[in-house]
Image 1 (cartoon, rainbow, N blue to C red):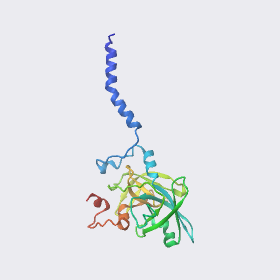
Image 2: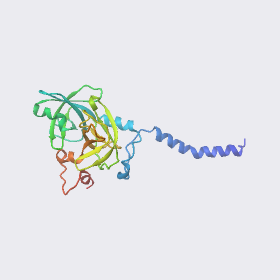
Image 3: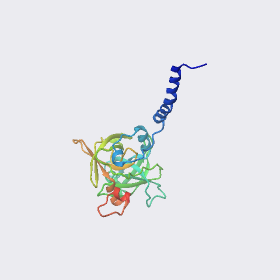
Image 4: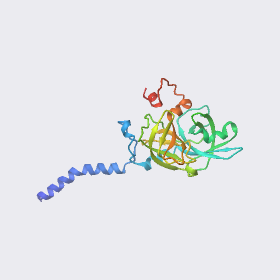
Length: 252
């Protein structure tokens, strides 16, 4: 049976359009993957294709941390797992980063430290080392967690960032914002954070850590995080000089 010219034209359009329709379908339904950075200075401004996937992936490495001193009031903050070997790695294989001010009242056996994933029971953690000047501390736990990786690219003003934490005791809190400015020690950003957010990771649109959430201002329109240079000053012992930054060091 011969087809009419109109039917042939419709069939031709279907053949041409089908690959594009299939590609759009797969793009919409495929699991979100990390971006492959081609121009770091430009790609950082982009909102992630799947925020829910990014949150889920990074929250598995982020915990609430408590310091319960023998004398004084309990403090609560946030910590996150990193690939970093310590002197206690044999007994406590998971290393975590938080702020010094979160655990300072428990240093030297003055109290106990606990961590917990969202909806899970707290488990013991121990303090390994700290850098009071840069407000960074390292703790360790026997609970195994996936690790977050540090970014190789500096967060430029305007970059999209995500803060994870336990804001005001609400575990698993997430806020989104943008970088306002940076210097060698700190990052200013618009993310909403509060007590309990301290020590949490500041995440870029690929899921890499660009800073450590550290402080907030009640009456200002911005909050602060410690940069990776502050983290590198003592904890990582990057051994760079000549005015180099963390990202200069990583690019060598």
